[in-house]
Length: 158
Image (cartoon, rainbow, N blue to C red):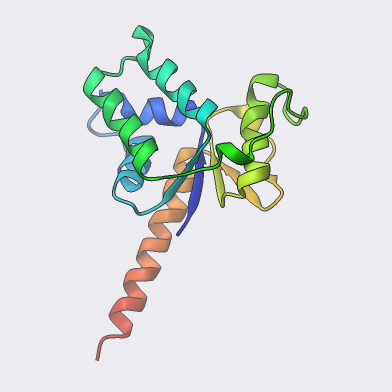
């Protein structure tokens, strides 16, 4: 199963109400996939706390029921790697020291993808064996994998 570390901005974007029904909401689709168990999220206790804090801010625009839903997904459909995460300070990998905890978590948990909207983190492209991608790119990769999986299943029918 694909293992994904979601940056907080992706989680918040996925939980916000839909404003334009004609636009594909990649972050929302990724949250739905996570909730359905079609991918495995990776969090640490500090990252889960960051999700909780940012979702609860008035300016996040996320309703309380959606906040609870997202936190439930993060708790129930996740590999928690908190015991592996070293204490701060973390090595400087990105330009923004606030993002270094994500890279530290990547280092100890080895996800397939780090999904972020942060340009400074996206600039890494790859950290160890983890591909750093925007939500739209990850959505495309997973949709492609779904098509391949479906084609294989169809071709193996008697």
